[in-house]
Length: 101
Image (tube, rainbow, N blue to C red; front, side, top):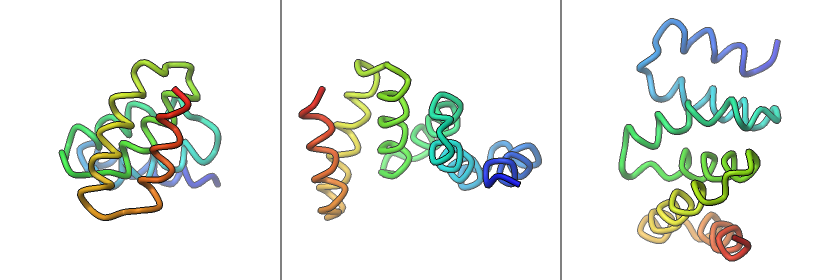
């Protein structure tokens, strides 16, 4: 059973649980289903202003879906959060992604 199937069951049972939605979005992204991960990651990004990880994955998923103009502000917000929260490795990765846009 795919990881996404496990979390899809949990999301079906508790659709407002942001942690389950994040895990589902992350699993879909890792399984190569970037477009399917977008609504779940967007839900998570919308749920908390300071949650960096869903924004990083959401930005990457939008890039993979051919939507760079939508990805850029999300990646920029994720970069700001990475800097504020002292996450140096994600900040470096985000700077590189943004520079390529």
